[in-house]
Structures are given as C-alpha cells and as structure tokens.
Amino acid sequence: MNIAFSPCPNDTFVFHAWVHGLIEGAPNLNVTYADIDITNKLAAEGKGPEVLKISYGALPWVLSEYALVPCGGALGRGCGPLVLTKEKTNDPTAIAGRRVAVPSERSTAYLLFRLWAAQNVPGGVGEIVVMPFHEIMPAVRDGKIDAGLVIHEARFTYPSYDLNLMTDLGSWWEEDTNLPIPLGAIIAHRSLDKNEIAKWARASVEYAWANPRISSDYVMEHAQELSPEVAKSHIDLYVNEFTANLGEDGYAAVEALLGRAAKEGLVPEFDFAALR
Image (cartoon, rainbow, N blue to C red; front, side, top):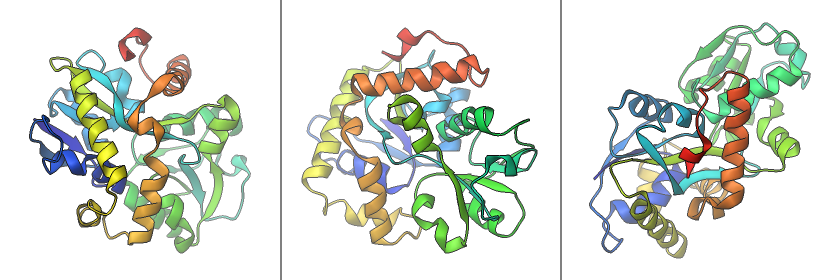
C-alpha cells in the first residue's frame, strides 16, 4: 500500500511500527515523505497514494475521492499556528495591508489566520505569499516579509530568530470555540475500507506509545536537523488522544472549522455527512 506523510516527528512516530512491519495483518507500506502542501496537491489532483496525511483545511476539495480516517491525524490544544513579526507588537492592526508569508493556502493554519484576520485586522492583510514553512522565519527576520504564519516546531524555535509572537491562533480558536484545533488529517481512497486503515493506524499509535524508544532512530533520521529535545516536544504536543480516536469532540472541531471557512468562502461547500 502506498502512503504519504511528512517527515515531521509526530508522523514518523505514529507510523513507525506500521512502516517497519510491526503491526500484525497490516499491509506493507511504500512511503513517500512530503511536506503537507505537496500532499494536499497530490490529493486534490487525484494523483496521490491510497493513503495520505493532508491538512484539514484541504479536506473539502478531496472528499469525493477520499474518506477521512478517524485515526492517525493531528488535533489538539495548545498546538496552534503562530503569527510572527519582526516588530515587537501584538497589535493586529500592524499587519493591515502588509505582506504575510504562509506555508499553504489549503491548510488549517491558513483558515485560522484568515478567520482571525477577518475579526482583528481592519481592511485585511495585503499580499499572501506561499513559501515552504522552514523558509518563513528567516524571511521575517531578514525583513523580506512583514509577518509569517508558522506551524510545527517553529512554535519552539522562533525565539532563536529574534521574532515576536503577535498571536497564537490556537489560543484564539480555543477561546472562541472551546474545541481542539484540527490540523492534519489521514485520508484513504474511497475504494479502501477506511475502518481497516483506522485499525492499523491505531495499532501503530498504540505501539509507539508503548515502545517510545524503539522509534527514536527513525524519528531522528527524518527530523530535519531538529534536536532530540525539540523532536520529543513536537511528539508530546501533536500525538494525543485525538490521534488514536477522532471522537465526537474531534468531529465537532472539524465541522466548526470547515463550516466557518465555507461561510467565508475560503473552502467549497460540502455535505458534512461525507466526513463520517
């Protein structure tokens, strides 16, 4: 079976056991490691593997071909995207009409940013520039961009770039909805049995939790030069109860995010029943 997910520590931690043939009855995996912007595009173009990790923000575009798997993804609290600036300010009006770098326009981070900006930035921001997430903080630091929307381990490392935290979009979302943040979704082609995929993914998650040291070499091999301490913080933050089982709170969070985004015209309208 072909699968694509990012080389980030949470994904490699979750799928280590399945990738290495440690889950009884699960098919062998042929893995493509790719940034989430790439997997979003692969799914939208119908050229992706049978199973992919994509952003929840990209889900409405692919639901006709792919089903949401209620296991293996990333939702949580205290793990939202950040808006960073070089200027030391937390006044959102400072980025009105300014250039903002984002890692993708089909991402939860982008949807949260646009929903937040609609409430807090008079007249809206200016140009949106899409760039790989690892290039965003240097671009803000060097004055090439006015603000940056960052994800993943950037929440731990941005102080080393001498950048300012304007707002934590996760905190904003949680205060506004009292729901977790839907970040990364596991999807499976509708020709497959998504319950089987969920069973194997859940077994891989549970194996990782029971044997955290066994996956460490694999995690660090793909950790994009992160320190072991940052990689562990990344896993602790993004691999949680929602990774094992989306549950009713998880589904409610997905419906809230995508429902609001659809009303703002940020994603296509879709039938919520397709999420189940």
